[in-house]
Image 1: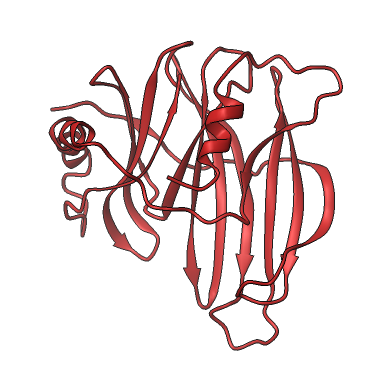
Image 2: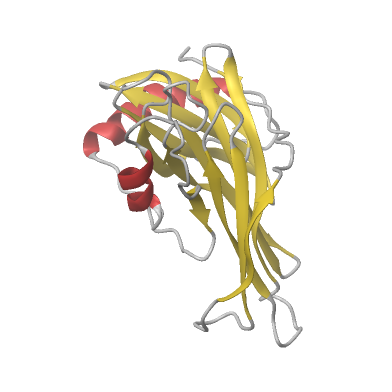
Length: 244
């Protein structure tokens, strides 16, 4: 799980989506923080291997270069498919077919059963967050972080989605991190964003930008104060799958 997950659990998974007058937007993701490894219980490992992995294998069957490399990347708690449910979502990578390409999935588990399972192209995704209801439907939204290093530059973006009776609701994508630490240019440029949101039927999103001039332990300095931002369109094609 990522280092910002405890903050999400404490602040975002309780109460309603109704905004309070004068209340600051809720923080959703801070790209200055680093992820840590996910820890699964024995029961979770058994369930995922028994229920989720075979379904993923069937979903990606016949895809060129897609071998079964099932690996759980992260997990998050929330009420993802119905209000007040105690559920856990698991982000996994099933296979890698190229640099940043391959098969990934998102499985939601409740009381030892898989209640939702999505497959999509997203082999660069590495972190997951459960967000307190943003749009007032009573369900927790899901934040997925992904990215990679390309020709010396590392980039990260996050997407926010919700699971509804009609399928996946997409709130959009935000670019949140970029550096050129793999290149020869000196000094290097490192930029990170903190994304926040004001809940409502049509949530409003905000960005704060920070930078530092090296790739090591120097302090971050603020580039811009919180300002409104419009998310980019999320082009991900999610498809619902089930055990075969």
